Length: 78
Image (cartoon, rainbow, N blue to C red; front, side):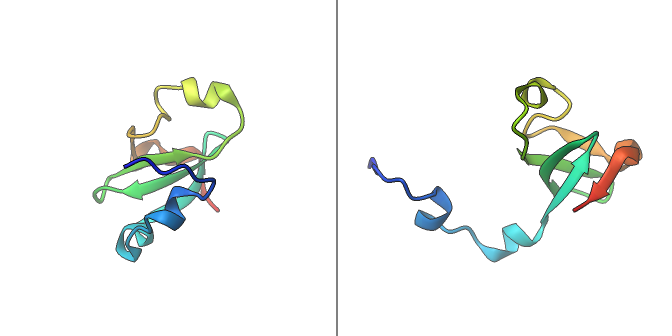
């Protein structure tokens, strides 16, 4: 099935509230991103919220990358 629409995918296929409650907006190394806590020691990058293309090329910040809480010295919650 192909949908030709300008509507965001979140409006067409709404996600469950439980998934969204685990996600947080943070700033890490000057880059705003959406992360999800995977366990007590790590977060996983879900989405980068930046307009700078260089941030998307950084392997440490790409979606799916895990960041340890020990490395979160430059972390600030939004």
